[in-house]
Image (cartoon, rainbow, N blue to C red; front, top):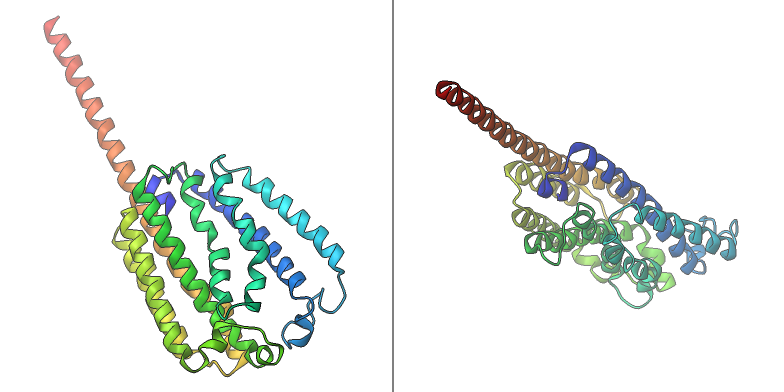
Amino acid sequence: MAASYTTATPTQTLSTTLLFLTGALIMRSAGCTINDLWDRNLDPHVTRTRFRPIARGAVSPRNALIFVGAQSLAGLGLLLQFPPICLYYGIPSLLLVATYPLAKRVTHYPQLVLGLTFSWGAFMGFPASGVDLLTDMAAAKAVGALYASCVSWTVLYDMIYAHMDIQDDKKVGIKSIALRHEKETKAVLTGLAAVQVGLLATAGLAAGAGPVFFVGSCGSAIATLGVLIWKVKLKEVANCWWWFRNGVWFTGGGIAVGMLGDYVIRLREVDGKIASQVGYMQEDAQNGTIARRRIE
């Protein structure tokens, strides 16, 4: 979305995208390590997590901490590749990364905290493209709506994920949105999907996106989320896992394709305007040359 807003060159867009993908991989893995450290005494009691490295004793907490340190340094090194202003947006996320695993101990909505954590990258795209969110209100509105949309999307998918552990969570005392709304899960999922798509469209409006974005990104999100909510069998662990693992690619892929299409169209429009301006300048120059010859 930031690439379309700034009409960055394809080279700039590709390099920034690769940096974001690498950063997401590093910080996601760091978050998983931190989560396993916090939950090392809970995971052995949950069927799905009892064979995780720390839970089964294959990796010691000390070595896990060293690994987290290395991951964090790698993340910092990557963050330094972005414009300096990105440091102010990126560093605060570390507090959420370090503490979000604790949420399941105190609230039935740890998925919301997870969403706040994993969606933080939405704040980074525009500053990474040279846009100051403190002075560009349109970009700030787009970022706020996009972040909230990603949070809703994360809660939706992780609610399905939580249904995989719902019986073990009851025994161990772990809280989750799936437990809190076990009897009305599909209604909650529908509400989250509506919020996610609505906020995604709001972000597009704020950023001045074109029809391709709304049809491609928002339209595909409606279709894929609708199928997911209709098809997922919440009582079957294997089915929940399939939709959690694959559904995110269906929805995310559709959103990405819509954004890419919007970016390509905007880039062509800019190239067309530049070509027209060059044509006018060449025409003016030719007219000037003809005029001078007549005077001579």
